[in-house]
Length: 103
Image (cartoon, rainbow, N blue to C red; front, side, top):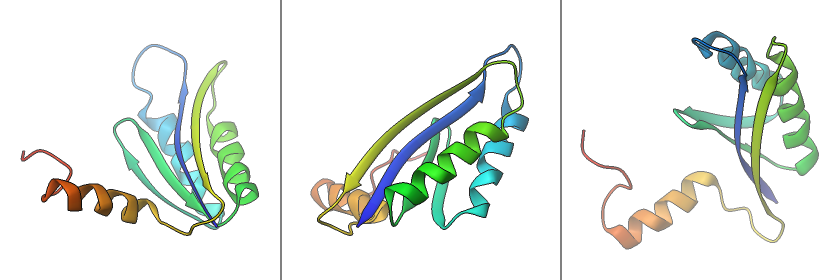
């Protein structure tokens, strides 16, 4: 089984949030998950829903603020082990090119 999620954790406040977001991302290192951060959030892969939710809880609690906003979208592939990279590669195969614009 592979569980893939999109996680966004941020303090609710004015100004830069990058320091607190970095704390959330760093908290993932303590868990058996792989992840990649992008401008809109962090894609996380885990072998089980329990591993994923433990990592998400740690990321959420790592942010030090009076108010924290967390968005979580989960793809729990119970009959398949397709990775996040394989999902992107499948789209790229149909596109016939990388799934991104040229800079």
